[in-house]
Length: 132
Image 1 (cartoon, one colour):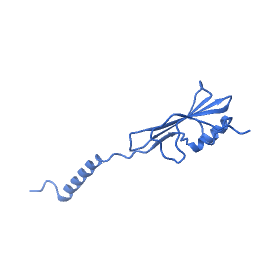
Image 2 (cartoon, helix red, strand yellow):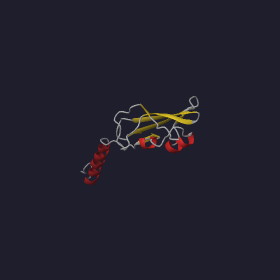
Image 3 (cartoon, one colour):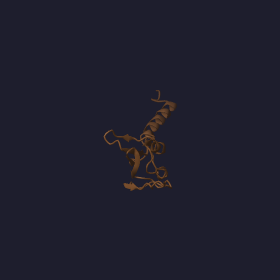
Image 4 (cartoon, helix red, strand yellow):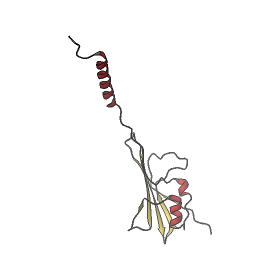
């Protein structure tokens, strides 16, 4: 009479079962997803009233949203979704032009020290007047 399974094949079957069940306990790796323009206060500090669109684009980059119906407004939106977390963080900065010159900036910002803002807050960012 032969045994149903030999010792090496029984060991291999048990090892395969353990590996397959262990895979169900671990979540797959998910990458961090960053979308848009990450605008911080150091970049906003470089903006001055009266700057041209090209100068603003040089400082902040190309806007994520440049609406045809609101040509005097550029929107910079940044979204961050950590791979292991369910919470998505979003910030938005809007730049307004009058006669193709920078007039004002509104939106959420990150402190210059780089610490994350727990709750995004909408506010108007005062752009200092240019000295003649």
